[in-house]
Length: 301
Image (cartoon, rainbow, N blue to C red; front, side, top):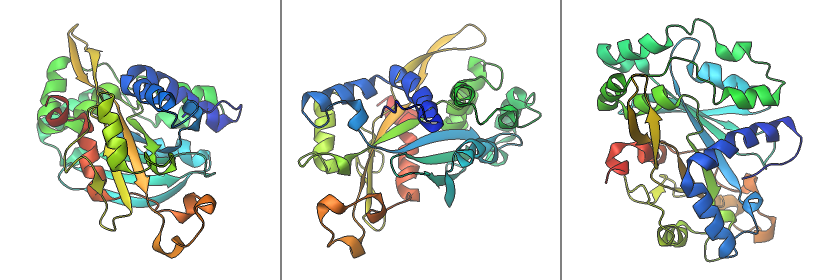
C-alpha cells in the first residue's frame, strides 16, 4: 500500500507504512514477487484490508486514547472483541472512504496480569500522567505520523522484557515496540484469478520463502465461512535494551485476508462487486490465532 496524495490521511498512512516496510523484509519480498508475476503493476495496486495496532489498557493509554486519532479522521467505531486467554480487548473501525483500510486496535487487560507483571508495566508508564494524544495536533498529519514512532515511556531493560514475555507475549511486544504498526493486510480477493484464494496465494507465499503462522491452521476461517485469513510469522528485529543488551525479538508481520461476497449479493456481476458487498468486520477466533504471529511458538519453530 502506498498513498501519495497530499490528503492528510494519506500522509499519515505513508508515515506508518514507510518505516514498517523497511523493518519487515517480507513486505518488499512479497511486493517484488507480486510485481514479477504480474499480480500487480506496483505496490500502489495492492489493496490494504486493514492495519492493526497493539496498546496497553491503562489510564491515559490504550484504546480510549489511541482511537482518537482515527475517529478524528472520520473512522467509525464498530464491534468489540474479547480474547479471554490472551487477556485482550479490541475494536475495529470502519474507514471514512472505502479505499482506506479498516483499523483494528487491541489493548492488553493489564489488570488481569499477575502483580509482578503489572508492577513491571507500571514502572515504565507511571510517568504518563495525561493522555499523550490530547497533546497532539490531530490536524497536523506530520505530527500524527511521527507520534506512531514516538517513545512514550523509557526503554525497557531486558530482564523486565523477559519477565513479561513469560506471562504475556503481547505485553512484552508492546512494552518494547509501543505503537509501532503491528501489521498491514493484503486483500487477496482483489487479486487476479489463480491468486485470489488463500489456498493458492499461500503456495505463492511459501514459494518465495515466507513463513506462515500455522496456529489453528495456516488458514483461519470465521464461523460463517466468509472471512478467511492467513498471516506471516513476524521476523526478528535487533532490539537494544536499556542495560546495553542487544537481543533478537519479534517485530511486525504481514496478514492476508479473503472476504467472500455476502449470500444476498452472490448474483451481482463480479465487475460490480465492491467492499460493501463482502463480509465485513472480524472474527474473534481468527484474530486470536493471528495474534500469535509474534509469539515464540511461531517465531522459533
